[in-house]
Amino acid sequence: MSPAAKETFLHWHRNLKDNDYVFNFQEEILAYCRSDVDILRRCCLELRELFRDVTKIDPFEKCLSIASACNQVYRTNYLRENTIAIIPPRGYCPEDVQSLLAQRWLSYTAERNEIDIQHDRNGGEKRVGPYLVDGYHEETHTAYEVHGCF
Image (cartoon, rainbow, N blue to C red; front, side, top):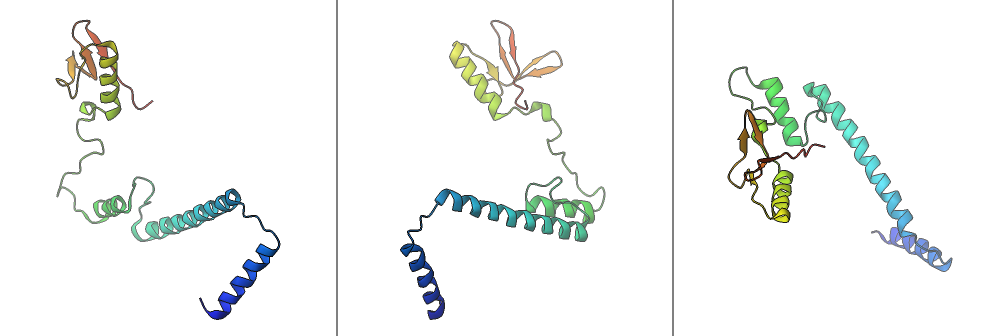
């Protein structure tokens, strides 16, 4: 800080102090956060426009990170067809994937009811006809399904 800027600052500070200024933290932090979000919003809009102009891809449409946006550009604009397989976002067998939520809920339910529930990490998912169920209690023939997307 230059001597002139220091003097200006000290004058400003003395003036507030002499006039019994009360700093309102809640008001100031709210203004700061709103300003921060506005800056981020404007930067994101500019990035989006530049990215679309150069690559013809909207980085916010399917991508969660700059790395995934760059990967999307490569796969869309530069990767020759039939050179590598592109795995679908949920893989080829999405019905076989059990969520952490399901595992925790099934473990909780088994412990609470003092029963053994067969699930992904405890004997594997049970097949009932053509369906895989999240959990299964053999003695009562009870199937458990966790709808974690709701």
